[in-house]
Length: 123
Length: 212
Image (cartoon, rainbow over all chains, first blue to last red; front, side):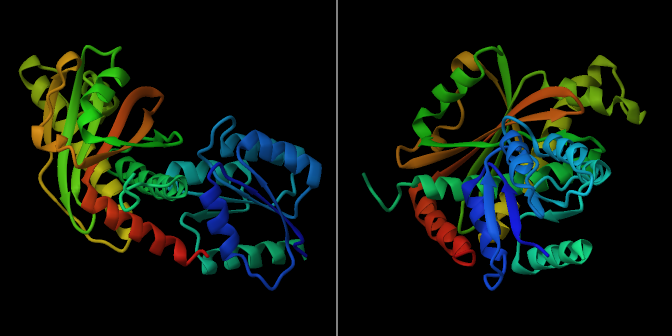
């Protein structure tokens, strides 16, 4: 069951957009980080059930952070939420172990669908 | 300060995210058309008076003796001029990336034409996808003029005078493109009138409404 969600994105607006797409009737606990490195450190600290990861970020990009998270926890459920929709980028993060890739901008449907799949995976 | 045309920090953040999405789309379109991989950087947005743009470009490109500018006009609720600025040798870099296609010639008589055509094509795709995606996200439709290329000595940037109407604003999207590990620096400038900024502010608010 999903309880703790980590959101890693350098854009406060993007984090707000994502949170608004997550159902309000579930009492999720949110944690947020503004770059890949901060996200990785927070991941190790809080062990979230699901992580939403942007790709294009300062300090450490999302692909590197994803790679590090998967090395640390091979069962990590990382949903890449990105504007970088190049076929090669999507293939790369899939190869690195992303659970799902969702294209920006997020919608209630795309995020709820991703969370349902994550919930199923956790059962 | 005229609040009707002043863009707040929050509006800038929204615009930056929209530009980020638009640039992702532009990169994907480019990758599909010419089979290259574009490493995207975090876009940085600044809004300055259009009259200050030549000085801004001169400062940002001071390490290059010449620059190439692909210019395209767009019309819709959001209207203005898009300028995509590269260092002058960007065309050669892009041609080198395409060199494996077997369709290119390196004969000198064709190289200038090829370089221009490459820049225009890349510029057209990037500007079209970027402005088009911004328009789509903001529920607008835009039409474009054909792209044209301008070569400039950076010490005397002399872009069209009409762009520098004191009432115009320049929305600067600064991003660095890296094509298959060759660094090609590209800046995109969108120059709009204050009327368009008023439209843009409303469109940004409408865009965020569904995320409230």
